[in-house]
Length: 361
Image (cartoon, rainbow, N blue to C red; front, side, top):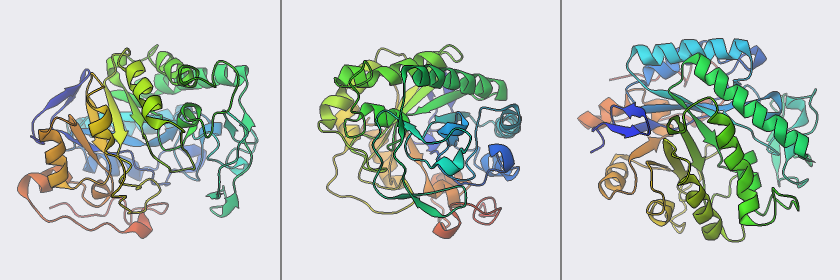
């Protein structure tokens, strides 16, 4: 089943393997994608769909050193070359649009100052600054109505740049404790205006972002990524079933290309390999409620991926770390060939080692 074609909205996939969005922290000056990224993505074009690494929509959306943006002409031109290289190999590729909210540090955007968030609540722990050293999280600035209006314009501009670059669509990153997830979940959203309080109010910003992006791309070329029960980046909600059931009900009205959900059993965001055996299986909980196409991600091997497809719990399965070390993962799965092991030490930063030098069959 994994090697049958599928349509996600109006995006056509030649198989049901998705390359998950993978932050690699190799952008060059100006947050421009590394020239090597063209090779890296085109090597993996046999995937049914490539979702790019998370790509910030503005300087203030940046949360780690050397992540690429999609808000300048230079960034857009570099992405255009990448898209053309993937299309030349008959691959499909969407841009993941990202704003990290409070998961940032002011050294990454000194002109804009403190990170922004729904509420002025600092995350626990530390994060990497522009110097690649760990710093304590700062208390973010609570976003005003004007800030939200600017944010929506930033999403629209990023979508326009993605369209200029030739992407087949975009994925709105609303997972993993980043800005849109911070608005959804009540640990981080303690606002008393129309963007806080009730579940309906906390959902408002995600709906408005979808509307902003849909001014550029038809909705059936827009995906949304969610992570119910995820705890990465110090996120949680007092009633995740009620919250994410409401999110799914809202997304049912949007005629999206797909919803992309991360299983909490795999706390792989941030690169660690822990499998949380006791975690709920969100595809079982929420798949039936969602009326459109569904991508599931989270620590799958080939057999698990086949099983979730056979059971109708997903229309496509996303693979992350296996795609880092196996540019021809689709061919290897199809042939039952052995997989290259990945080297965790080369996930973030650096040049071609651990990026474009993993061998194909």
